[in-house]
Image (cartoon, rainbow, N blue to C red; front, side):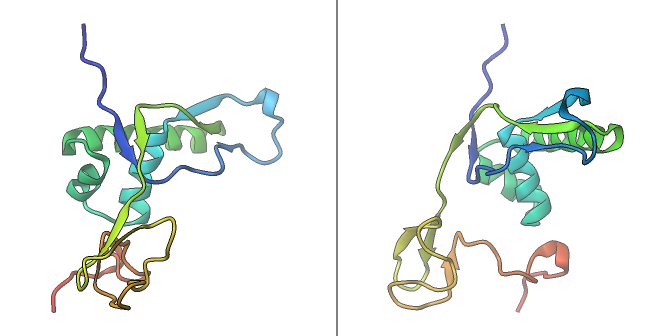
Length: 147
C-alpha cells in the first residue's frame, strides 16, 4: 500500500478556476483538471522565475517531487491548449499558507496579504526577506544577483 502524498504548501489560491476555449459550447468540451498545487508550481517557476530548489522549498517538498508536479501541470496545459479542452482548477494535496515578510533592519514581520512588500511599515527600510522580487529583477529576465 503506497504512502499517502505529503501536503504541499500553497501561497496563492486562484480566484478564477475555470477556463474554456471561446466560441465552443461547454457541453461539447472535454475537461482537463489541474490541481491547486500544480497551479502553484507554475506560478513559482514560470511567473516568479524561481529556481526549482527554491520552488520546492517554498512548497515544502523535495526537488524531484516539485519537478514531477511541474511536469504534470505543463503536460495538462499543453493537452488543453493543443486539443481545445477546458481547464478546471480544483483539488489536490495542499494546505494554504500566508507567506511572511520580514524586515532585515528591524526584524519586524507581517503577512504579505495585509501589506504590500515595498518597504517596512515599521522603519521604512527596503531590505526585506520573503518578498517577491520587483518587476524586471527576476532571474528569467536577466538579473543575476551580484554587486
